[in-house]
Amino acid sequence: QVQLVESGGGLVQPGGSLRLSCAASGFSFSTSPMYWVRQAPGKGLEWVSTITFTGRNTYYADSVKGRFTVSRDNARRTLYLQMNSLKSEDTGVYYCAKNERGEGRGQGTQVTVSS
Image (tube, rainbow, N blue to C red; front, side, top):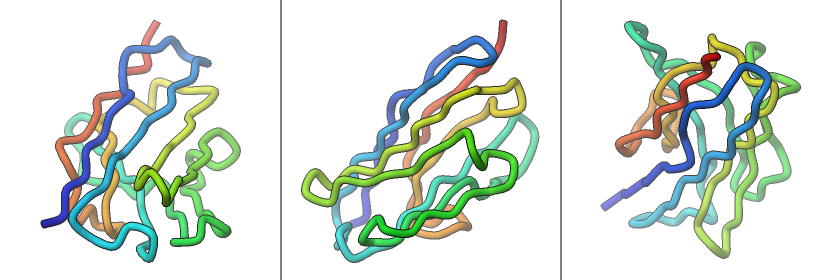
């Protein structure tokens, strides 16, 4: 079955960077568009980014555009999210998923941006 395992979160100061990873198994990763979504404390899931199956096209929420970069390595079945210039409002649990609604997401990785 679909398994997505996120990692790479942590505590970082405002302005800092983190790189999240997502290891995928149980489905055809190389032919699937992939998504990052997040959930801030007390709020619902928010779409963050999409990458097409080739990796040629990427899309971002306005709130992260210019600061986050999504990428993928199909040979390693791994999705990445490079997060720069982090802000306190980026705090939350980050998930990789099979669609913008968070389908198939794993346990997530906690990102906390705080001084």
